[in-house]
Length: 132
Length: 63
Image 1 (cartoon, rainbow over the protein chains, first blue to last red):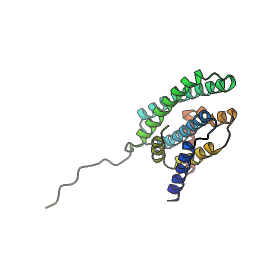
Image 2: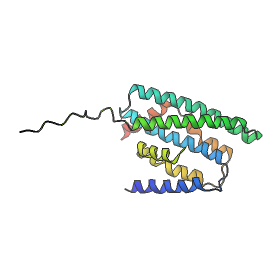
Image 3: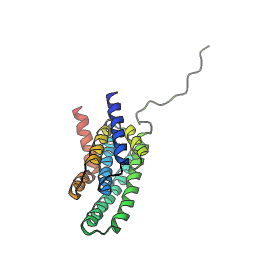
Image 4: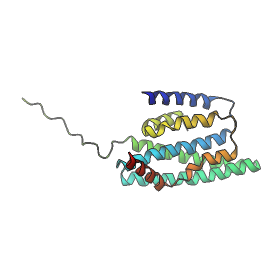
């Protein structure tokens, strides 16, 4: 219960901050938020894998999606640094779109795979016929 | 990132995600963030897939 309350409080605080209009370096904060969110998602996914809940196929899909996300993050960070050093925002704009797409793909994939029934769940059998 | 996706993740990931909300709150409540700080905060994106699995496995053995 305490965990749920702290989670609710954290989400409420986050919502307030995200909707606040006086935020400096919005793009940088979004970049860092992406890295932290994906990091947490991958930690959660790894726990799922170690518990034997993931199939080889789902592991391969997450590994590939994570690889694409890493490439997109590398590019976005480079473009962000160039933008901040030179003022040229063109590359950043494109890199940010690619990063966003890859992030959503990875997070949605992990979320959907985690919502599937676990591999070692007992098989659902039809109800026994009523005894006379 | 939509709030709905974030909430969905928090529910799906369970205990691991409990650390995420305060981290994000700290990130957004800081008045100023330099480029170097942003780069440092993005460092986890360099983590290899295998390292996540190894860390989870090590944690699993300890518990």
